[in-house]
Length: 413
Image 1: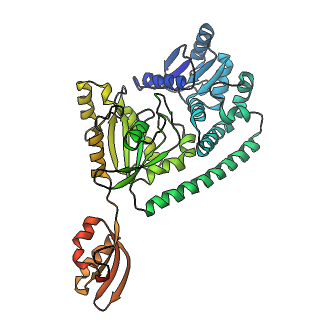
Image 2 (image 1 turned 60 degrees about the vertical axis):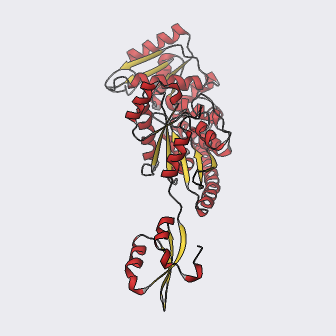
Image 3 (image 1 turned 60 degrees about the horizontal axis):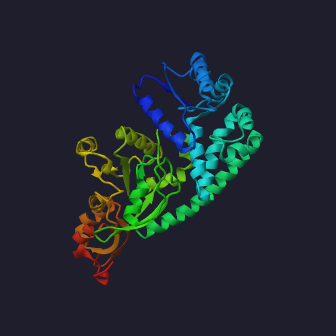
């Protein structure tokens, strides 16, 4: 059974509850009923209040439900009190998302990240979860380290958290080495971000033949995949598919996946994929922008791509064009809009800089000053005929200074 709380936000509670239903189905649950309560604030003891909690208990008994899923993160006390009133297992939105991540993590890094998030979530809830989890012995919310760590004390869990963090740092260093190699090669990097199930993996496959798993479910892929893409203008970029987002993405997951999400922080361009067939796509867009701000990617240039337009009629497409101005409308499934997307990438991906050797005459100190002001100077040497400067410039900038190329490197740099 699903339970949500509406606090002066109109239909957003129902919208969030509909997403919770999809999350629950992804985790393997069969939904037997939903309940939304409207109140000014959550009850500190039972989240819903004793009266409404009693109503949930009666519905659970009448429907034969064995689990209540609450569309917020509960405190340990709220969790314990609701279980006592309802007489069944209670899990919150965070535990549900962690459970789905535990199912879908396949790489060693992904598994470590999920385990870290689960342990950090479990630590303050040992007392509240111990009885129910040992009683029920499995199911949604108990996969991963949850069901194997219930009997251990806080000290041992903290020790395990320290070990997982250490292992993740080792994996992150490997990722950093690979990222540094790409940066040294000066290949621009583009990160695909967006709401879960918006079609990021489908777009990656369509552009690069990456062969990434594509399923019509939330969080079908967690492990980032990076592929090279040759643009129509002859340049090469790297395209990275990142983990999808949802509303109220658990903070523990954001922290645990920070090293993976840093691909977006270091990217030259973010391709933000929006599900055009979503009921309110602008809400999904806002949720993703919120997480990007949290991880420090808000300032990275963004190319907005609205996917799944094959599911829309002309009126729907027109509406999306008004809501998301300057967005590229595509259907990754049919290929429609792919040429426009590639053209947009050509226009938006920054041209990699090149190193050039320039001989600046002493009377052109203005040029030397401008190069220093832009931070382009890598080294300089004063000679009899002028200042020999090695500078890092865009090809168009270097072209403007072609007449100042140092004689020994004229014709190549």
